[in-house]
Length: 258
Image (cartoon, rainbow, N blue to C red; front, top):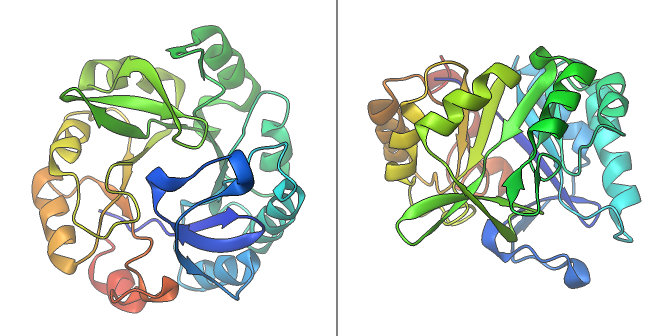
């Protein structure tokens, strides 16, 4: 079970938000924390601690007035830790190579391969050929509705028709190196992990999974370890002391990072 750090960039700032509050209209989001540090500062910290596989996410849409500053921050972070971070947010076949050449180890993709509410295997296959399976992470972030977990796109604002389950993850595992899954219903709340979702994710054994959402205590990490058998990687956002929370970054690195 490995700790995967994060650098979430919104309106040109590194911040932590309540995931379900993100709106493209007006570039709005409910904020838990806004940092005075640059994205590159966090990247250098993660490099010094030897933490690999963290993700840099651009949270504004490409037509936002803030996107250029998001991109500047992301490029600086990737350059500060080449090969150590993954990049996501608006990734397509047109820009995927750009982020890899900027220093990302992987690109993280959701919306491009889930268009019009369904998965586009033609796009997924094209992207896989372009960057290689070993450089591709599929973001299967989801929201609960009608007793099931549906993959959501466009910065978690739009439901697809695709239910997230083990069979679907197994089908996708031949196209990617990892999965990243935010439990959007609890993302940014610190209210505890979505144990049911973690149980689903733990059933997939073909490629590594990183879970994010709701971690607010060390007990949550122990529960994550128990449910997943210690195989689940994880991200802590708002609850981390780096972002104004109570969980110690150094303690997690030394005690909850295998």
